[in-house]
Length: 464
Image 1 (cartoon, rainbow, N blue to C red):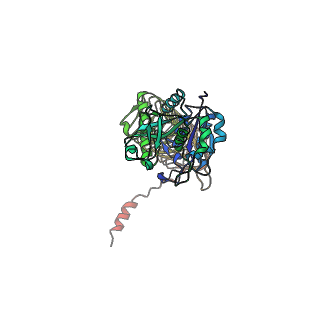
Image 2 (cartoon, rainbow, N blue to C red):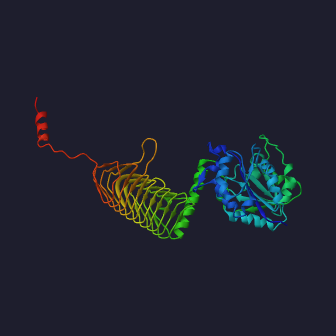
Image 3 (cartoon, helix red, strand yellow):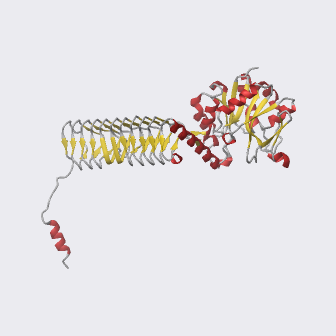
């Protein structure tokens, strides 16, 4: 018997209980969309050419989300039920033969090991299908699994149809299936829309196969919480928490110190080197890679960034889409807004913001500065209050500061402007023209002193 696995992920529904304009599978848990989680799980069972996602609502967005995985798509333009979703996929799926695994795109926590165990169970039998079941504390809303004396599935009774005795059964069908593909496609057209919604339900396929004389087996999973779908924001938050707890645990076992781990947020896609310390309430998000021996301060946010070894990120610092070199210090209260390259040994201090800026090794901007669209050399000192005026109301312009330069406090650099190497800019200067290397630039009014002026003013203020 052909036992190659094909996976179909049902992701066409909107998910009305989420009360969202966004399709349910596009919501995120653990830093990834639900559909990304379920597709990545499927790829542990089958190669991309045997994994298919059934799309409907917001199909373009779902397609873009999974495009990088190379999986196939089945377009369910009319949502007529889960059984209908597979009917319209017949041309793509039926020719592949083997075993057909079907589950929902809103089940991000399903471990690949459970699906693999279900498949192995199916391979050992002559059953037409194996369904995953679980003993639920509250099975309300789920179909109850009734077994025969041999332990095979005799029927699945839906909530609306069950007797009190049947509804007292805790073993429930959780909506994960492994069908023998040849048998499934032989009988799928027997599904009927005999329900108020006039839809074709995949759950009815169990009854169809039993009625045709086939055996249905059940694989009882041990951890029900990993198998259930996401239907509302409460369940989404619970899944998100589960992913983050798992990720933090993995990091700690791999040599990362996480202080008060219950407060820390780390996305599933993050990589962190050994001996790094993450302080309470920090968030490390997206495709971030953190080297060894780093320190991420309390309440810091690092997103989609690369930090080399021994980087110090101060409390309340925000780093986004940037690269930070070894031994650099950023923060506290600093912001690397986007697309910055911070070289090794750089110091970026409190209330300093960088945007699209390259800053060379050993340079310092310690206090209260804005450096946007700038190229800054090595060993440059940026004084407190320095501003690069990069926007003229229509376009952004570049500021270039050569290595070994000194920019005095409260300097204003009006871009486009270039400061030569080894030059000095006097405090309080407004720099609008190029400054040659090794020059001193002063761009401020000369100080004027009027002796006795303040005394005269005070004397005049007391006269009637």
